[in-house]
Image (cartoon, rainbow, N blue to C red):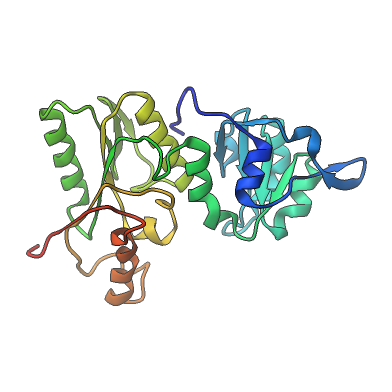
Length: 261
C-alpha cells in the first residue's frame, strides 16, 4: 500500500467526534467508554490487516464471505489503534481489546473518513486532480494528460489500470481505481512528494463501489460509453447511471465531455 511517510496525526477522540459515535472498549469482561485511549494518535487506516501499520485505524466491514471484524485480533497484534465497524462486527472487535467505534455503514463512511485522516478532502491543499471515466480511452487520456503536464514543467502523478506514477517513480497497479482509503493515502503521498497535478482513471465500478468517495476532482472527463462491462450492470442505462455521479458538483468542479467518440 502506498502511503505518506509523514502523515498527519489525529486524536482518536477527535475521530470519534467526527464520526458522531462513542469509543467503546472491553475491560475486565465489561464494556465501557474508552477514555484512557481517547488521546491515542491515528495516522492511517486500512481494511486489510496485511497493510496495517502501528497507528492505523482498522476498518472492519462485511466482505464477500467473512466479516473483517474476525481479523481484529490480528489488527491488534499489528499495532492498530482502534477498530471502526458496524453492529454486526461489534462483539468481535470488542473481544480483541481494541477501542471500538460502531457506525451504521463503515464502508459507506470510508471515503470521508480517509479524507479526514489523510487531510485529502475538498477543503485541503492537494494537487490538481483530473479524473477520466468512459468505457474506452481512460488509460490513453490519463497518460496523455500526464505527458502534457510534464512537458509544461508540472510535476505530475498518474493512477491508471496498469501503474501509478509519483513524480517519475513507477509502481505496478492492482486495480484501475484502488479502494478509497488507498486512493486517499496515494494522494497524500503524492502531495508529500511535491506532485502538482494527478491524472486518475475512474471506472464505473470504482464509482459504484465508493472508491473515489471523499475526493473532489478539479476536472472530470468523459470519453465514451459502449457495450462493455455489462457483467457488472444489468443494461446500458444502469451502466451510464453508474458514471453520472462523477459529474455532480460535489464530485467535480469542471467537466469535459467527448461527444464524437
